[in-house]
Image 1 (cartoon, rainbow, N blue to C red):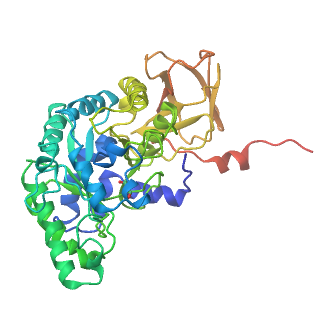
Image 2 (cartoon, protein in one colour; image 1 turned 90 degrees about the vertical axis):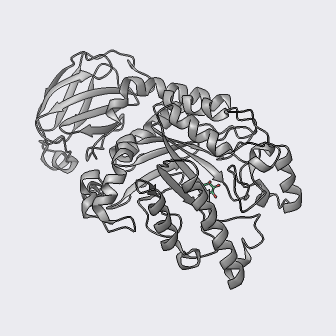
Image 3 (cartoon, rainbow, N blue to C red; image 1 turned 180 degrees about the horizontal axis):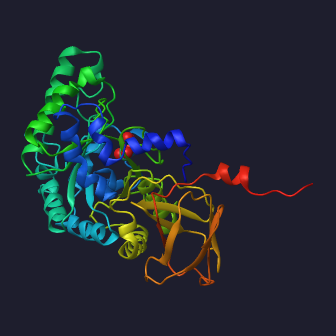
Length: 434
Ligand code: GLC
């Protein structure tokens, strides 16, 4: 999943760095400086937990099951009589997130199925008025706060349950009713749960920004929550873009890659396509290197329990983050990228060399255009012997087996911001006559 950037791309990603946000385009919330202020914690945080939870969790066959299996609304609705999670399941998720090193959470308050996990005056199709009898968004917010995590709300604009949810594109009266419903629910979410840090819109089908009245939507959100950040999925630019299931740096703009741990967002009992902890850590490093964030999903079961595999993966990632988190949080964009055994992050003049395929006693990096002053093992602080010439830095005397798992970090202290030029190596390395 590593992304290789040209120098031009690098300029783009530098422009997305926190310090550069002041030059970005103005927003409904009060301009670029205001955006930089609201986004600051998020740029530091780098790593969040996504939670997909709803009636689909009862069936355990993906969050799109209603549409994919063509389940009639009247039949699907009955799941609301079965969805009755144990109280405060979110406390466990929040602990899991904190231990994994995640700094914020984003939970589905309403997915495309239309069922609301929060109390809404606009519908009876919501957890407090059905079998569950409790406001699950309230429980979630309290849980996240108790663990010191920032709180995000995912909210799907597309709605497969609301009678106007599809016809609103052709029928103006339906659009007006539907937009009043959606705006009304967003107002509830922005009013009833205290300070909210992120609003994460999803799927704007079947309307455009004009149809959704998205400018007015964001304006209301910022009036109610002056510190909030919003994504780009209500068909406006928002504060950050949301590449899905892939890592793609946005030029001149903040971005967050969201990803599942297997192939499904909602709980899927049979989905065993789990990523390894190494893949997850490498993805997180790749995001941090390019100035982005990583939002990693769990799909709890209907009772709120989390699939064991997800717990195991988050545990490994968390143990790694406990030793190496300071190479991720607040990382600066890093231009160095070329090495098949390593990825990189950077803070100031320190290059973190993150080796995922441990090469053994000697580890070499080509093309660095700065002087390396010292090298040490990140986790233990142990100094590492190295030598540097014009073309490479070579560390030697390293342990034959990888000292850390799943990725080992070495700190290269440099005399300037580390950059790399592989063409310089290719062109100038002395050649011998044929
Ligand atoms: C998509 C999917 C959805 C998932 C989301 C996460 O829009 O429709 O199921 O919630 O992406 O990014």
